[in-house]
Each structure stands twice: as structure tokens, then as C-alpha cells.
Length: 170
Image 1 (spheres, one colour):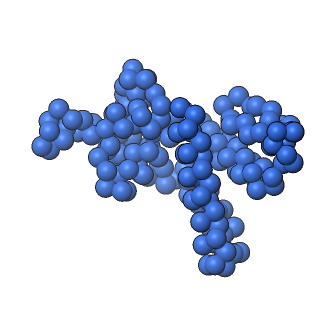
Image 2 (cartoon, rainbow, N blue to C red):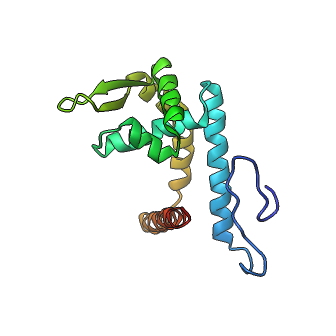
């Protein structure tokens, strides 16, 4: 890990020390390290399947929205991943050609294209993330339900704070 505030290509850099920020916060530093390690895992897992991080992120977005019962469109994917329209089309083409998504027309509005993950994508995604889930599950087993509830509230607040900061800076 680099020096506080030092940037690594492709990874977020968080100010952690200096006169305007005060001393480094250990929790912020741990969140930064977790983010970096999670990114490294996704990169390594994607490399094993010849998939770029953007492809992996797209599948995660599709899966998350599908689980919530939302219709996933190319426009939603473009917005979530902050891509241009041509880049979104190229991404969907790659995922389609790899057998990970299919494009379907909406049942009532035939103009609207929906993206759906294929069984192959679910199988490969499960295989890619099963080791991580197993290790995380083992790590979580050492905590009580009350501790996990506190951590869940904390992580939810950190996600909300990150979304707020991103939205504010746009």
C-alpha cells in the first residue's frame, strides 16, 4: 500500500492525513484497504475468465437490479457504470457474445430492450465469487449477531456517505 493520499492507477485515493484533514482515521484506512483488495479480487477473477472489470461490474449491476425486481435496460447500465452510449453498446455486445446476457424486448413496450443474465453467467459468477464468499463467511462467523448488525449499519452509512459525496461532486 502506498503513502496516504498517493494514487494507484485505477484505484481510489482517499486523503488520510495532512493539516486540512487531521490525523489518519484507522477505519477510513481499513475501508480503503478493503476497497483495494476487493478491486484486486475482481481483477484477478476477471482475468481468469477473460473479463474486464467493467464486464464484471455490469453483471453485478444487472444481478442487483434483477434481484430487486427492476427492469435492466442499456440506459440504466450506462448510467450506473457512467459509460457513453457507444461504450455501453460495446459492453453489452461483449457480454452477449460471451453468453452472459441476452437482449429481450419488453413484453408491452417493444421499443424497450431489457438485459437479462443467462444461466451461464449465474454459474460462472457463482464459481468466481464462491471462494470469496466462503472466506468472508468464515471471517464473519467470529462475530456475534449484534456485532454484525452494528457493522451492517456502519457499512450502510459508509455507502450512503460515498454516494452523497459522489452526487455532490457531479
